Amino acid sequence: MKLEITCTRAEANQKQLLNCQATIENLDNGFRQMTKLLSIAGNDVRLKILFLLDLENELCPCDIADILEMSVPAISQHLRKMKDAGLIASRREGQTLYYSLVKSETQILNNIFTSIKSLKKSA
Amino acid sequence: MKLEITCTRAEANQKQLLNCQATIENLDNGFRQMTKLLSIAGNDVRLKILFLLDLENELCPCDIADILEMSVPAISQHLRKMKDAGLIASRREGQTLYYSLVKSETQILNNIFTSIKSLKKSA
DNA sequence: GTTTTATTTAATAAGTTGCTTAAATAATAA
DNA sequence: TTATTATTTAAGCAACTTATTAAATAAAAC
Image 1 (cartoon, rainbow over the protein chains, first blue to last red):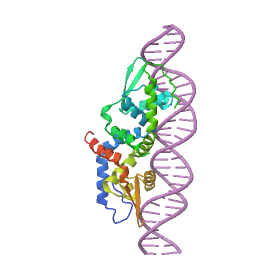
Image 2 (tube, protein in one colour):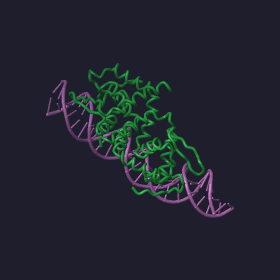
Image 3 (cartoon, helix red, strand yellow):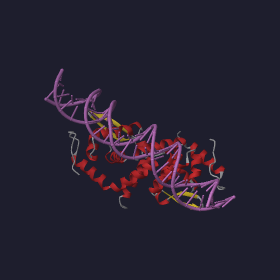
């Protein structure tokens, strides 16, 4: 909360800086949740898995490993991270686990998916 | 492109998997760009800097360091990463560098900022 | 020119990430 | 029960990230 003014510029308006600090602090919860979501989605493999789950509704680790040409344990560890964060859920059917998106968490994700599709054109 | 079917489930529809692979490959450019954006925004400090630049239009490294109570070199390195990615730009005024958002890059960022503000309520 | 101020750059160290390999569960099949 | 299949978990390691500290630029002030 204490603001150490380190630059001596006249324009470094202390009131403005204190306001910024207050705003950031006030939105702390939002920043924490959004950073968690973005850091998870900001990985090539996980972003593709999320996209695929949106596309196909549900997939098992084995299918995802085939599609992305990666090892099953590597996929499994990404799935666990996303499940821990509440982004995806699983249901069991015999030996197979089916993973799917948790819909309430996907508002920003939908924007991201749409954006990925439109970025294709400007390749 | 070669699809190694590793699971033997009947439901593992090879045609579906090949379609998924083709879709992912087709959107490769979109995934690459989006992963870059999200991995940059998926860091607590950088997300706050982007938010602050949106809020205040422009800020110098020194102001940002004051607001976030961090060292100037730490901020400077985050700024460089975002500048390299084309997310922000700088203009010089004497000794001071003012950083600001590159507007054409902020479509997804605006959704993110809005979301951060609304997450506040559900704290 | 020398000093001060704002910023960047570079070197380094601690922490994190994400893969691989091997072992452990869990459910089904023989 | 033993073997097979789908998946997870754990250990180990290489690569990446991000802060710190100290040194290097760059512009302005003295």
